[in-house]
Image: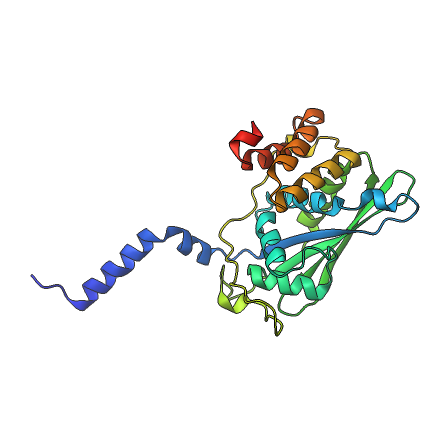
Length: 267
């Protein structure tokens, strides 16, 4: 018996829905996509250089902590780093509004969050953050928290709480994960780069991990480990991550990153 064209159409729609549940789910999720970028060292005094490189650890840990916020979707740090590498933006380190918009659009994000940290040389650390709208380049949600430098996770946790409670982001209608319209224009002469689809988002860590009283020296070791991972130096990264875990075995982000490394190195 022949089926009508409408029957075939319904069958095709049903098959597509079954085969692509993740795509349908992603398109129906209206939560804003947010990329948390690196944090700049704005410290002052003779010991300023002691805090160089810590921004990457702050970024990674803030992403992991903020991932529990059900109001937004956060791009995973490794995906952000891949775009930075492809766009040759890794070496500069500093993030300005133009860079934030460029990276955020390639990632398919609607907002970027980034900022800086400052040690006053007397045992205090200030962490600042703000958002940038990818469509308008407007800055907003300026926030600041302060704690002792021997409790960097407490500082990040306080920023997470502030962002969770006070962050105001508009839903951008019509934007989809991996939408080609989200790709930033590439400058003339720059190598062509395919848009990086946002297929995976950051996963939250346990509350226990974020209550660890991680000192700034250990955060620097952790940041260096992330840097070695980005450089594909797995052996060096593993050694540094093990140093962190030897001192703070409950610091879950270090354990998760160690597990990502080749088995023969992470064991």
